Length: 230
Image (cartoon, rainbow, N blue to C red; front, side, top):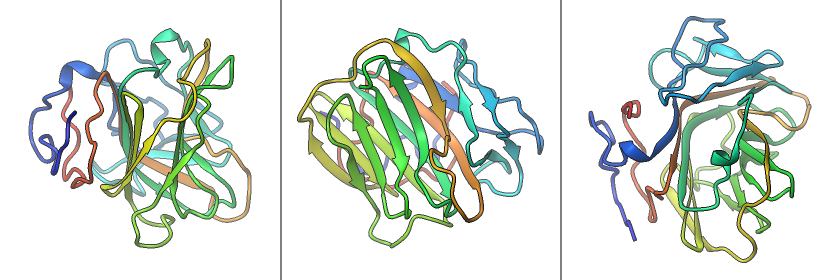
């Protein structure tokens, strides 16, 4: 079992799990761009309903994914490789304004309805993490609402245990039901599931998926620099 304090890659130029990186987006680029470059070959993403690269907000690099309510970033040809049924890590920086409803960080839909979902809850109190048919786990960072500030989000699985962290504050849960299964039907990042009042924007920066490795199994210090390319 990996049990880490400050991650080895925080602020560093290399990643000990580079070979396991499945998808990595820095969301760098010109304001208004709809080109989303994945640093892993073969991963293609497309804007849906008004999302773009924006320079009004960012955690690193001067730009970030900028999404309107109802918009999302989609993978046009999701295949079986997206089924996260083994160990994995999902992580990013998130800034979400109050939109009156939930906002997805990552949603992998399947034909059985038993995929993987990481999202910020309506009300902004916590991040939820569900895999397969097991009950969603919720985690905050103890500092109040997650709205209106950049927070680091981590969701991982190792064996029969799920891990959910906000700003490095970890929750650990034993899985109680089935794994993710079925045929992958959709892959979305940054989708806002409910249309509501308020400023309709969600920002994502430094979005990374690692397969075969749960990078954290205890509370940790969030990264202080962009993730290194694999």
